[in-house]
Length: 116
Image (cartoon, rainbow, N blue to C red; front, side, top):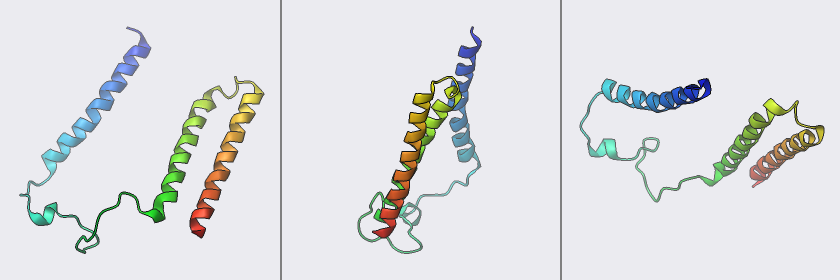
């Protein structure tokens, strides 16, 4: 078997077994308590929950959008970095320009969100 395929299979096995072992360990070590209305209810800073629940608060939405943009930029850099020296200069300059524009747009988004 090729060493690359073996490494991929070991990585897949490790990726599957790690979360399973964490769940089993958590269930083994935690105290077993009976379910009750207090345990099953939502807790918001010691206050009773009122109204409907929203998934994302508007005041934090710009941080979430910036985080997603940062993740995309990081993925591009991680893919581009190993081959940066072998790629001709024009595509390298274009990718660097893309990263600079993306960083500027993130900053503008943050400024707009803070002014609102």
